[in-house]
Length: 262
Image (cartoon, rainbow, N blue to C red; front, side, top):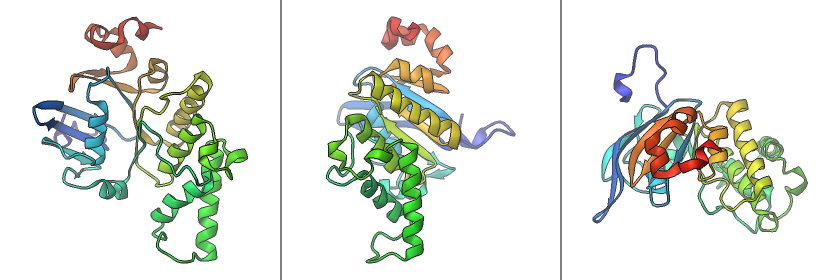
């Protein structure tokens, strides 16, 4: 359904991906995918390795231009916009490999995007009022991630789960309208996976943040998602609620197998 022809009374989508493809030479990484994400939705995107999931995120966030199709964010065509313009409009992104400043502390990592968002990054000295506002927001973010006891430690000294939490909090510091999480629980044990899942669920429920995540752990996907989109060989195989996806024989045959019933 296009953004221009939605039913009367329906909320405008926050993100509308319209028939987007991405080719790398003869390789079709994303093949005519259309997807709509409503404000406040938590959408999971799943699929086997090589399905085009990360390339799809790169198209949404502006790291790759589409070969064809267009992307609308909050009703604006952002297809030609670079990543920084999309960030300024309210997109934030994490990556498969944790992207933080490892030698800086948790608080220092959070301060950088907060100063950028406040337009203060090039200032030689902040006013006392600006500094107090930033410090208060850092306190809120640290508490949100339950990192109070480790906030003054360099991130490279922290466990992987805490590093990933720091990256998610850094994205949140930009006050996004849409948060894109690329495999947030990758490489984690059960306890770390539980902690990250709980953080994502709390962000969604308590703040109403719109979240799209790529995830391989089906326990996480079926616990968190309002709706699931399934990619296979670059194309959209199906989408629906977790219950609908669990019953979809095409999805089971292509990817999920028996683990969807676990």
